[in-house]
Length: 406
Image 1 (cartoon, one colour):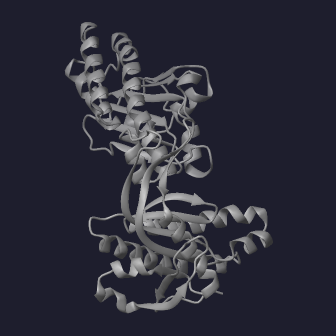
Image 2 (image 1 turned 135 degrees about the vertical axis):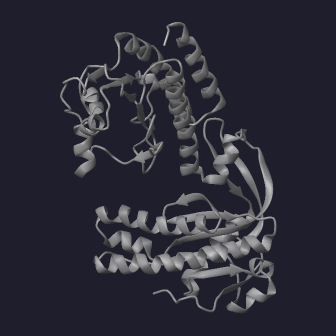
Image 3 (image 1 turned 120 degrees about the vertical axis):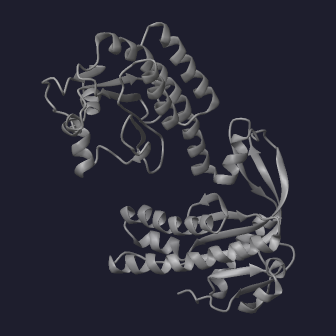
């Protein structure tokens, strides 16, 4: 590979990064393009930490001969078990813990195979290995994403030449910048989805961030909260409350998402969600599907917690349908993407009525009348009630199978 080819490869990386190619596509294309220009690459790997509630980072691989998993996510590397041991034996850890920016092992020419994977790479015919770290300045760091790791290997009998390494040192920073650019976009989507919900995040990332900009939509509204949460939180140890809240929030949120709904807000132990569909009856069916899914999840969760002698509870659910304004509300410095309108207040009051009537799910007459008539047979009217802060009394319904709460 000639020095004059560096600009060509760098331009390709820049173009692909601007187009939004994935990190795996960038690494694969980079390695293949370098090989076409004569750089003897046979294996490549890149990884970078990210900002995600579950995964610590993402890694990307390429091999000139073997089929490999081109991308995967990894969990915390500094916790315990094999992941910690492998991390501490890796060339990347060696670079991260020290002050060097690269480390090389000519594994086919007598150098030690003292890093994880090197013995296998040598057995597979690789002769030379180099690992690099490109550290970010504080202004370019987000969470644990503070550097870019990469390694490359060759099967050429004499290994990498000095010229090859000069080329790599000039090109890998461009690869790092392209991958970091894509990773930042992924982080932005992740943060938006985690804190706003998938649908609201999509709208925000599409540019709908103007204060006061909203649309009027008809949607099924779900409001749920935990039974006796205040009493349990007063009696349980402080160390028990957060894990409990996380466990029950997880089953509620996953049930809503699996049924096609979008969670908009977590309010202490409460959850506000919406279900949208072209046909309102389909949105109602989805909400009832989420309720059924939640009950199944609750049985499993409560059985597990009871075996562990930990507090258990149930979930109150209110279901309603109505017109709401869906969009940005707040100040110029702090916005919330949510729903507002009388229907939102109404669904929260319906959920609150569960405590008084001893049923764990209640539905408004508007919700029930939107359901296809064939699906109303499993519902029972429990009477007309005045809801606090709501002008008109509501006929409320429950499921024939709804359990009385303790």
